[in-house]
Image (cartoon, rainbow, N blue to C red; front, side, top):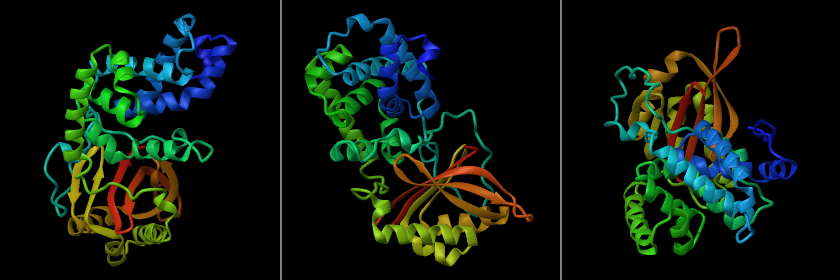
Length: 316
């Protein structure tokens, strides 16, 4: 979306340029879909342009836009299906059986390009908080929350807004915000904090041990080296491949699925990519003539003990 698409005046064009990425991320945290977040951001700026005379400067422009974005997302959530990951739709799959048929009609959680998330010029604490709040495991847990609880958690724990400011944005009472936050945090403890795939603090890809693990993983995947792949994975690793509903739980099953289901498809090339502030790769299938075709985006969750999750988004 561009400012010209909305026929905005020059001042509003500058607002779009400055705040668009942050608004897209905010909408993505609610909706779990990058494409839906971009569409929602367009609606946010359209509403902001229509009501621009009402902006009095009582808060920052970004805060005002995020309040509008929150209301836009809550409106959308009334008619949108909850975004899911394969692990929430059924038990882990048998790695020696054929994978299930793709289910493109399911509203799967989608990745977001990391370029929207922030850079080193921003406050380090806010950048860290932002990166943590767009990790796939966190977002998968957020998607399990009812819309109002989701909003309260994002406003209070991600944006660090006060209970009073959150209540004003959601047009409810402070006690109701406090109650919703308690329920949301309880649910998050049961889903995200016990998921086993939270990334280590800071910037894990810069950690030498993590870097070696990632390099070894790429080499093993490209060479179909099962024994070397085992050494890069945590015992509790999970692998999913939406829109295919099949998913695999534990090192033994993930390695078996790799050897029996993935390796036979051909030779692979993994190229660095940037999604969800996590180590990521584009997956290419290489034909006998050496020509490669991109078939998926891969997002990894990793810490000092190894890779804890492999999410392969086919068709991206």
